[in-house]
Length: 233
Ligand code: DX5
Ligand code: ZN
Image 1 (tube, rainbow, N blue to C red):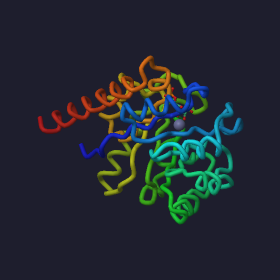
Image 2: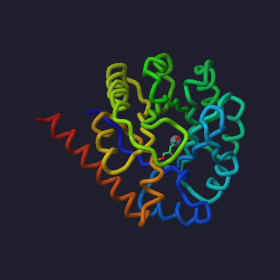
Image 3: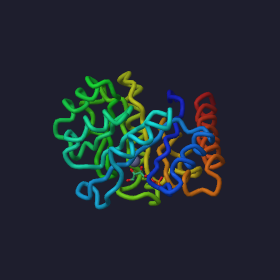
Image 4: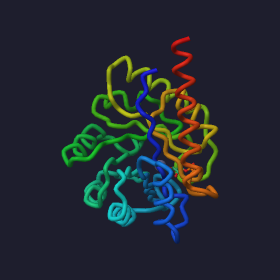
């Protein structure tokens, strides 16, 4: 299985804002690779959450790359502000980006990585024409809008399809999963071909944040070992 090294991206959506700094430090100590900031506009998704200020504060205090997951209509209007605030990767939803090719290209021109997210009801064919320029395809494993929802196993089929396409066409995009990711569901996603694991509740609602990150990493690594074993028989 030609997978990339697993990446754990901690979504601060489930973190107690009163303790945010300490929680991010604890997650960093546990070995997270990135921070994931969920931005919601109350239109594309029913909820409102986070924004440019959150990214700016994290950028000021953390060395980790920051993924900004834009769950907003008209994402093109907000790119410059998030880039200026310090985003490393900006993820837009294909459902609200009719000019996706232009949008991804303009992110690259600004020097940041470009990702595309798919809702559970959106098929992989929606991104087939941008697979060569996308740095990440994010498969939503819940309907976007809230932390703490139940993982949708039906989304794994899309992870496998993307993995197969990437191998066959020789592309380099990361395959990310987001929603309901925990030590039980992450191995399933890993076996289907996911590389990036965005998780909020499993990390920030745990009793010990560093231990929760380590458990998630072990679960992902054990799935990778299993997949390698089955590949070699
Ligand atoms: C959902 C967000 C996710 C969310 C994940 O709309 O995009 O990133 O924070 O939360 P958990 O891991 O609790 O499902
Ligand atoms: Zn997200």
